[in-house]
Length: 143
Image (cartoon, rainbow, N blue to C red; front, side, top):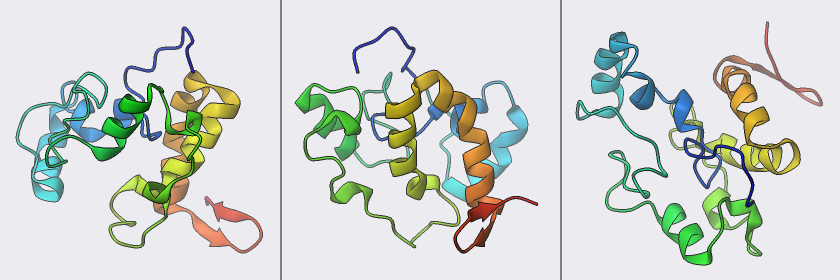
């Protein structure tokens, strides 16, 4: 996806670092206590996956997904011939705390609508993921 859109804060796997509390804490210090309690935050605001070249403080070493996509020369996982690979299998583990199950949706949305549209949509998607009530045949519903 070689284009002029700013992908700096959108990770190769579809996460939006700009909406992450570890990134947002720089402008909202009230997030500090929650970050320490929930994720063992080290006190340093995150710069985002791409600026850190996959060395997020919440990942031991370098993120395998970041390393894989970098080695293949892509910006996003959906550009890969092996997409979707096993790294995108949904998992119940930590699903109520981490938005990892959103990634496949995110990548499909970015591919179809672009990065800027995803940045605008991510808050709503997280709201549905964490607070929506599942309606069979309709998906997660708010309110």
